[in-house]
Image (cartoon, rainbow, N blue to C red; front, side, top):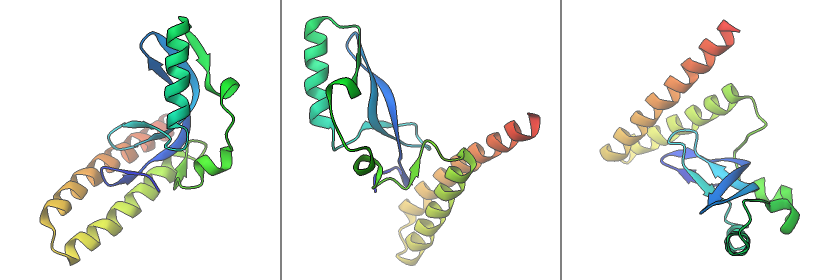
Length: 138
């Protein structure tokens, strides 16, 4: 699993910008708490090579899938959540994991980690409330 700031990252595909080149369909990991984006570690080297060649050629847009072959299932097997899931389910899953970690942090009496996890739980709760508002307003 890939973690960021106490939350597990969501596996998806996205567009990344390398200088002036937009590279589409790059396998990425996205943190639902802090919005951090990482290139999936299994394709990081391929991304760097493609990005450098595309930039060197002056390409404004490139599709990662056209140049790099990879097994989709192996890229997302270590992700707890995926973009295709219901956002409310993702947030609930993230809250459950953060609560489990908070329980453990209390057991080992790590007050700094408890503070960080409580802050993230607050952010996740805020996100859950926004999702609830969107659902009731639709």
